[in-house]
Length: 97
Image 1 (cartoon, rainbow, N blue to C red):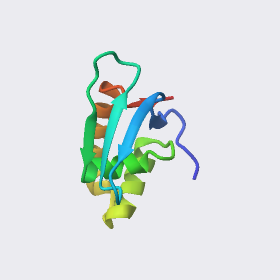
Image 2 (cartoon, rainbow, N blue to C red):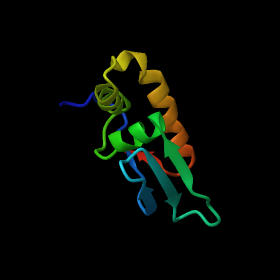
Image 3 (cartoon, helix red, strand yellow):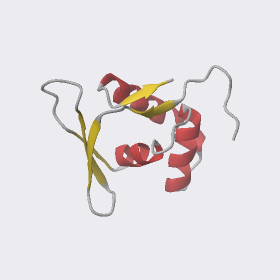
Image 4 (cartoon, one colour):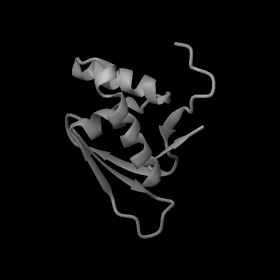
């Protein structure tokens, strides 16, 4: 899949501690670079987006992966996925290149 020029590529941040529940329905993620940080628990669709970040990609590519996992059109969730990726960046759990 070719990437659109100028679109940032999202990836999980480095130096994270991640615990996954049995079955992968929930993740607890801790930014080890941030003193005093608390684990962030990702469940349901948040866990789906986190799983989709296993491979770096643009927001559209991540939305495509999530949509495929949930059997829905990417156009219906693209804005929500983009917003959640921004939230992950704010918490230090994701970054862009």
